[in-house]
Image (cartoon, rainbow, N blue to C red; front, side, top):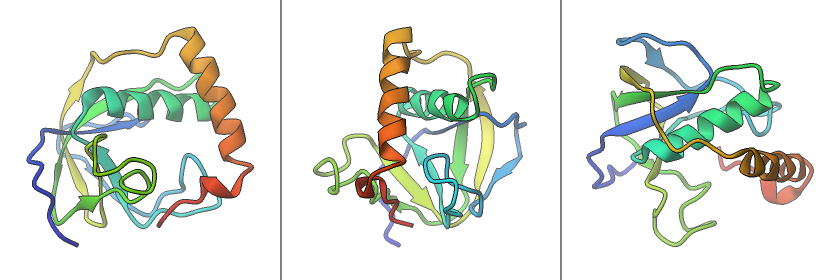
Length: 140
């Protein structure tokens, strides 16, 4: 893996309740394809991007889960997330990354741009389609 130039800060969105010092590790099932165990842990340099991921994770968990955004620190090498960079967007405008090494929780973010009810409904529809089409493949 090559190290991108982005220096952060970095964020991870999830529904998990975590504490400062906890480690996020690969090896969990994908939110988007539950049949896929992920070889990487994903993060972004955009708090709102992590907020979107957290809200999608809450939606996929049935909507009762609490979306959470954490400030994270990579413990090893990381690379641009190939699931969005160049495959879907030229370059890395989403500032999305992945690592096969753990991410350390260094804080929690309590404010980000929340989805409106209309945006949440649009994501519900996108996710239901994503799970049924080949284009929803994850580069693992």
